[in-house]
Amino acid sequence: MLGGSGINNDSVFMRWMRVELGKLNRGVVANRKTLSQLLLEERPSSVTKSGDEYLFNEQIIEMLAEKLPGEIHDNLKFPIFFFNTIKVDESCYLNDKYALRALQILGELGESRSLHEGKVWVGKSIAYSIMKKYPSAIQIVVG
Image (cartoon, rainbow, N blue to C red; front, side):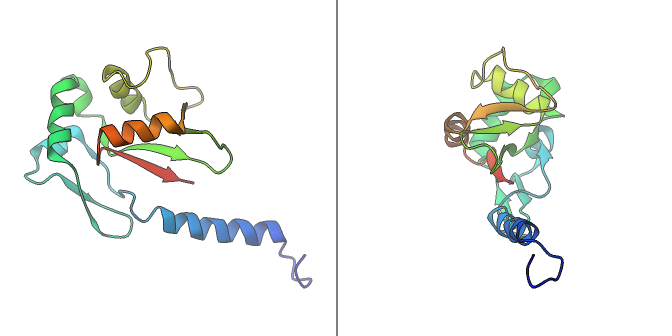
């Protein structure tokens, strides 16, 4: 207890952590768009949580459109999010079945991977290498 106020150290720490994590995620896209939507835009873009414009790499978007089947275009939202949690050191997760399928089609994740309890866990090194391969199409969300 801090000064008898009924506030414990854990709740103060967790509140501080939420504020700091929010700062780290300011560059994360707030309004994700489907591949179909991005293909219709002259300059594929969205807006970050901080209100800044987020430009997608047009060549990457076009390449993904060519490689991915049409039925995925209307459901796959960009950027694809990998979630990095402070509770797990070496892995992060996807929680989007369309993103998982797209990454499997692209050969980035194995066909044997599947969602369990709404998530598929991936080594951070794999997620970061996918992010480097598809600039602007992948973001790491810290939480």
